[in-house]
Image (tube, rainbow, N blue to C red; front, side, top):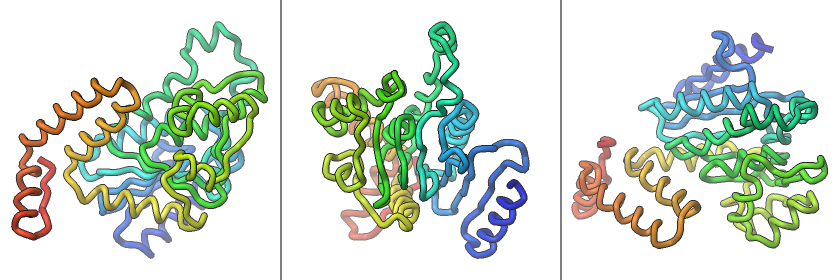
Length: 285
């Protein structure tokens, strides 16, 4: 599998010289991920547990958090694309890993709390969802900043069918995204949303042909990457704050960060370029 992945990576590198492909598994870093760093400021991270439909277990999530933090600290990366396969973004948390645990174990180890690190990444994450995004897979997608769905995408929180409830944000983020009534129905019945209904209800930003999902995500990430890095981070922080606090607090936070942009050279460059009818040249300072 490693040799096959390396061969595929070499082929991609030959065909597209502007990209640097690396599984990083040859150095013993990623076993359940495939990464692709582009020269356009975009980092692609692919979940890679094909036999398990990318079921999210502790080793995979540990690698994912590490890969995201690595990208977050890389000055060459301004936006991240997170995706899976055409068959499954992630079919859920790994039931085999959970089924024999008891209350004392999950409480002492704070089970699934480590997943929260995904939502602390400061750079924008664009989720490209094809196929199943169920349970933990749906929750992981909702931790991202933008979701673009392939036509075959299916979203759901079926934990009720397993005698439990969502444990990585499903009851909170899904309700904020699609409203209480539909979220309640999905969580209490285990029913699913297809891609087009997910778009209609605001869970995803748009639906594209399945084979074009990653390409469309990269286009969005590339556009984001053309702007000032500190301003990108500030904008993401403000939008996320709207989901965490009341309106007045959110407005005050926005105003403070808006004022803060006036300390940036990029803000001066952007407004000057607009006045001079030219494209700005941002330096991320």
